[in-house]
Each structure stands twice: as structure tokens, then as C-alpha cells.
Image (cartoon, rainbow, N blue to C red):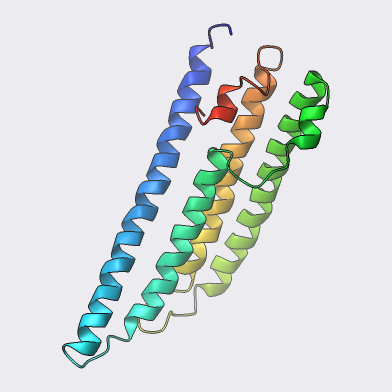
Length: 179
């Protein structure tokens, strides 16, 4: 395989950094979720006072954990896919199919982003019970997923177009978690 231009590597490193940030935030949210449920159990059974805000915080955190994890999955190309039919095609067609899949994912991300922005605008006046935060804080999770899908899948598709003659699906660094 020939030497990659430095721009490609920089873009891939930047996307890796964004993915690591997504996973870091999701991991932190998971730790907070576990701690708040620990506080719920302690409050309920030791102090005999149930903290009622835990359920609403848990719903908020689970939304962010799930959607940030899904965005990282798009970057790592771990979404559900059936490669049997693609692998039976000639190599140039396989490449086109993979590029097409990337842009379909990016298009789906654009739809999610637009719907998420509409939900955020709709939820600005609604307050989450027990937390006092606008509902838009919860729907920001789906909006971020849409934007990250556009970023991850769209740039991967663009890089595959730029590398079209130089890569194959079998030895593609984009398919092995490098990107």
C-alpha cells in the first residue's frame, strides 16, 4: 500500500480524537449514572428518603450515553451490515458500494440532525421534571448524533473517493478501525 498523504492522516487523527471525546463523555455519564443510582439506594434504604430526581437524571444520561456510543459506532464502522453480497461483487463495485453506504449514513445523519434541531426548538419551553432543565438538553443527544454521523460517515466517504484507486475493502485502514 502506498504512503498516505499527510492530510488524510490528519483528518483520520482528528476524527479519532472526536470519537475518543464521545466515548469519554459517554463513559463519564455512565459513572454519574451509577453514582446516582447508588445515592438512590442509599437514600431509600438508609436515610428513608427517596431522591426523586434520580429517574429523570437517569433518562437524560441514558439518552446521551446511547447516542454518543452510536456515533462512535458509526466512526468505527461497527453498525449492522451484511457484507456477503458486497463481497461477491467485483472490487471496483465493492468500493462504490462502500462509498454509497457512507453517504447514505451521512444522509441519515442529516435527517436525524434536522429532526433533532426541531425537537430541541420545540422542547426549549418545556422543563424536565425534578431537574429544572429544558427538555432541549435531552434532545441535544439525538442532535449531536446526527451531526457526528454526518462528520464521521461523510468524511469517511469523501476519503474513500479520494483514495479510490489506492485501497481495497479487504485491506482498507478505514475498515479496520484506523479511521
